[in-house]
Length: 241
Ligand SMILES: N[C@@H](CCC(=O)N[C@@H](CSS)C(=O)NCC(=O)O)C(=O)O
Image (cartoon, rainbow, N blue to C red; front, side):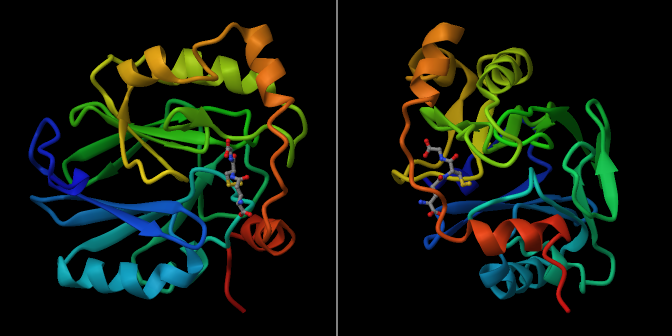
């Protein structure tokens, strides 16, 4: 069964998980089935036509284009999606980038009869946010927590291993263990995890803080290929000329 067909708690959530294979990025379309009010999380510029086509086919009314953070590996699609008349771009208040709306830790975003809580989860970047739908028992973790991994901590705002470790433990691992977690990327073909799975199986975040710092300092990842174009564009929300 596809993740998008799971019945997640209350059934008034329309849920679609979309994938960009060039950057291994997940984009999510979420909507209230009663009102058709919708949000899109982490759209990729090159996939905007696909996303808007689906939004139209499902007869949704897009309210928010949310970026979980300022991405370094791809240009966000929110600048282009904002051409959709009712849509406002949304970013965490500590992101240091442009957006129509900034959300603080603890803020609630409503779309139709659904409510999403914003939790600040810095470390990969300063403005990283995780979005939680408590009634549906799901959270969208951006790059803070990946399936059996986590976002790197070696660029943008510098070495932030301790910050990321504390963010994940205090804001994501503190959620009930059955909550499903959807990341912004997966590089191994996985689609979804749970709080319990990551609390017990994550090879980085189950370690002590000292061990975590050591692991993160030895990832030896190549810089994202498109970082030099992506970050400047995303600082202005990927806005189109
Ligand atoms: N090869 C990709 C970039 C891969 C990468 O660095 N991914 C980031 C998230 S996107 S900035 C990351 O945090 N990875 C953590 C990990 O453990 O893989 C490219 O060139 O774009």
